[in-house]
Length: 230
Image (cartoon, rainbow, N blue to C red; front, top):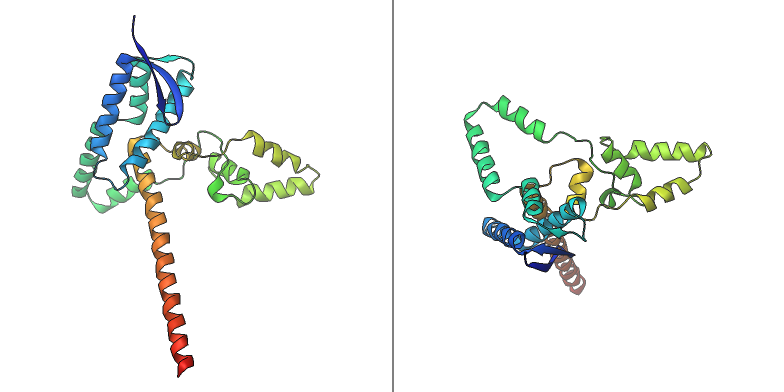
């Protein structure tokens, strides 16, 4: 007989036995230490929680009692800090290799992947993100070709209702894990952390650009007022 506890993981409720809960708590403690020097550790940890919750939903469902095995399988998918510390060392070792080898290595890492799951892409949408989501899933770099296909189908007599149905049926990529699955990219603690940092960095850059633009406008107004006074 084992004790069980109810938890909220990434916004999803789960029932988990005590042993599994302690393993998961230890795992997240190690993640907190690993990401403590990052700029946005809380956002990163929360996104990892969401991804782990999604893995539990896929494998065990929300009604099952999570066990040690469920937690271990989720950790294998997400990876541990130790795993990525080893990868960092391997990448540092590459500094001793010649430039051509490094170029080929990074080119392989940045290749456009075919998606693993169909999502609507809200970041690259015109109407509902269906075309951009399908383009990503089939490995088409530019969604304009899918959009042109839909235009041709509508001209040929296919009702635009088909697009509406797809928009209702295909889920929207909401979380970072959704976007990774949509692009066929690995979903682990390292890629989640990098994505969060990139997003925060983009927001910071936009804010700085806005602040700089605002200051310049104020300077221009002051200059115009001085000219009028003269």
